[in-house]
Length: 80
Ligand SMILES: [Zn+2]
Image (cartoon, rainbow, N blue to C red; front, side, top):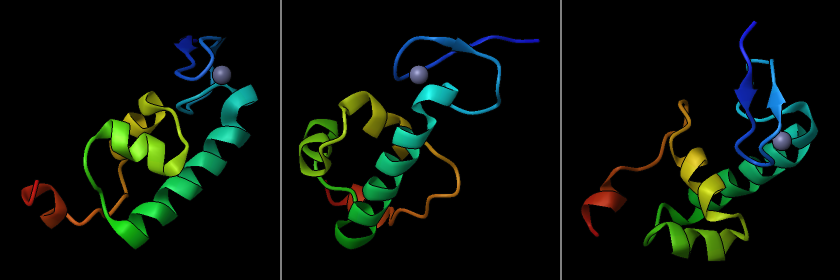
């Protein structure tokens, strides 16, 4: 059994998720709002900008950006 450290609260847990069971609901909600923001507006600026625009902590924005299965338009990045 392998322990993982929750990237939101720092608790240890053993599930396959990115965060502990306590944070899972909040994390899923934030991911949904992040996703719908990006679908509407694309990836803009930097982490700080995205964090302010979505109200999600920078470290979580950073994690969401790296999630597989997201289809961000890469052209936005090239324009920076
Ligand atoms: Zn947690």
